Length: 456
Ligand code: TYD
Ligand code: MG
Image (cartoon, rainbow, N blue to C red; front, side, top):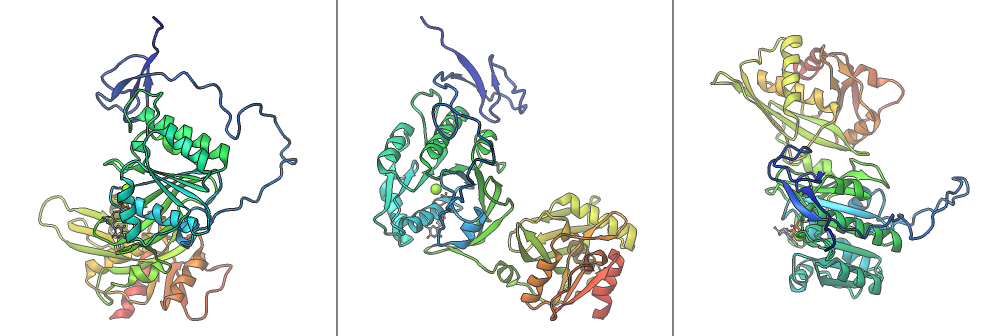
């Protein structure tokens, strides 16, 4: 009898071992190695075409201006770097129920409305269920084809006979290849199916979107290598209790990463939000202590967001530091700076910090706004409602320069803010719009003085 070649694959991280082990050396998880039979049909495939490859001079290669396919959702196009690139494989991850299927069905219908055939493959829902959703979204186009299928070979046949301009696979965890023995959703299946879809996309020049489920920890289920294989990785996020949804690109071979598109989930599907700053500031209560506004860059776009702080004496030994939308460590660091450099007695105070609207911020330019919010709540003294704070705070309490100050200030001026408080070093080399005053400061102390003393 021919010898079967087996291997043991970790279902968490994709680690491959020739022997079974209780603990995976890759991710240190227990009992995650599962036996799988090796597929031996791989024979040195070349991306971009079967057969011979030949090195070419880079100057001799014609740079094709990729004709990107645009949807009518500008937010979606921007996150992709200006539309859908032919032959690209894009992974969209997100929690269950966040709206991935809704988004992709809307995208499909918008492409199909241009008389380009689109194939929507659903491995999770029947065609009737997809139809129900389509009715709700008022999607009706003769070029949109729907199939409920999980066998990749069948999907390939559908793609080859229909020759669509766009393919959606919802979701990768339900698709399987017959040649692979492991269950759908296992690391091996997901990897094999993705590489097969990659070939299909590249060889036929068809863009393929695949939906990936997210695990409890927030990573796309299956191995990290899935993210390495595809051309772009988008995350669709949002809090279940908010109607806002954020589409974020974390990898993009054809555009900038950290782009962000904002949508709102309505009764009839997702609607793009073109003026996020207005939305994030909508519910702001002016003139209360602990609230400031920052202009943060999300990719290439400045967004104004409110940062709220609540500082109150702690009743237990260990003061609490809780933050939503910002890293906890940064809060501790800023509180230490305020204590040491400004002399605020914060060590026995609980601190709760929140970025309003459910956004996550992680650039250093938000430091100053956080620090001012904390001080404002601690002193129970409000800041001026038409001030914006932009700057990184160093350990000696100095305010440091941030990138793209001009765009941030313009956004603030557009929304009617009157003063921007930023680093002194940020003042050179540009001139602010006329209707806004830009004040340069050197230290947190100076910034606090500027923002609060004029309030009394
Ligand atoms: P869905 O696209 O099925 O999420 P996913 O594919 O990421 O699991 O979205 C389901 C949620 O969206 C569900 O809670 C209902 C809501 N929804 C709307 O609010 N409006 C709509 O028009 C649609 C289609 C869904
Ligand atoms: Mg779905």
